[in-house]
Length: 212
Image 1: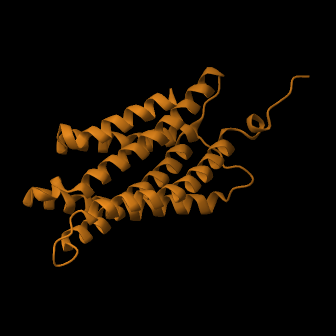
Image 2: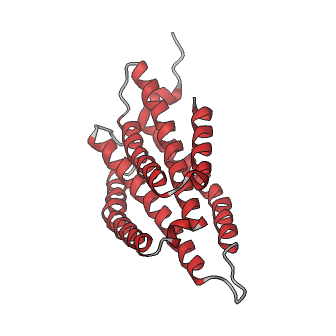
């Protein structure tokens, strides 16, 4: 009798639950160096009289915007997975997970949209906002996170498809985080010049090579 992998027996839903836990753990570890990078960039904007107030505001603005897009992507991925036919496992709380996903999307979505609109207005009114190192760091980091998660989901979806299986959770993750990556890739193409956009393109290429 052929040996059955316990992970296959558990099904795609469990694999993506484990992936979400792993991604949350890695995100927590990545949060520290990301914040350090942003603080270092902000420190370069110091003025003789102290810290530039605009840098302080930008720091919290872009950290909040990044967190909101992560929350919205998590909620959207869960809802899309259910819409595509994902069935919660016995170890999950279907009602609690659904309520959390709806809260993430219905609360985080409008807040993210409002803050994005306000940020766009600030960039239109003050060109210096687009030249900020904090803005470059935000666009680069958010695009890379979206690319990494979407590429990971794509690998799982294709592997299941080749095996004759359909992974609704993986497809939901792919679409939600792919939208995060595509939106910020478009933003980087429009807002960043060749010099400031180089880290985004270089690191994105490295992620692509690592996932290949």
